[in-house]
Image (cartoon, rainbow, N blue to C red; front, side):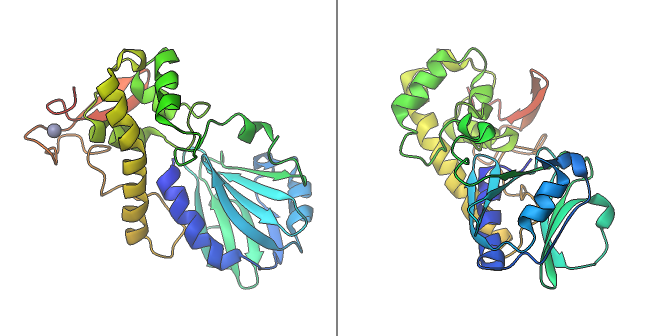
Length: 267
Ligand SMILES: [Zn+2]
């Protein structure tokens, strides 16, 4: 699933392609993915102009000239792509927004990716956004906020980082990387972390996400397709040597989700 660093790069690379551009044609190929309906999304977008591209949590938000907003959530397996209109791959496309001879495609073989067209003035109260916790780069995401979040969280620290109602934008991959940075095992109970652990974790959240944006942007300078993971330290690196010590990266399952860590330097 694309996470905050991937989506920041997608936002930065999508903006120059669509800002100020007229949406010339729209097709929703998978009607159940479009809310309130495929017809409403198609007719609301066609002839509109994209004014802005923003990100909140794992949502990409296109601000439109008529003050409506299009929210895109790629869910687990979705991707965006920028391609010449009428080129192949139609069968996996959930929806396409045409800008002259190029189009923005939302691609998802599982068909779970979602588009929501939100009326003017309703973005802040839109339930899927208003239920999100602060972005890790928001001024409201302070060390005291993280302390309270961890102290009240009933599960493991990895799950606290992935809880979108607590802090938005971090998923399975970057929670592993943040915990590697902080030298904390993903299985540790959030509420049992020491003050020193919490301080390191707070620093590592922003540090790791900033690093992820820079590394992902370097590998995808203009594109909008995909998640870039090869530079990560532990996530997806089972059996490989730790980049910090002599350990070997291990994969375990916590509450049904895979977690990667170095058993030697994460305690
Ligand atoms: Zn290690």
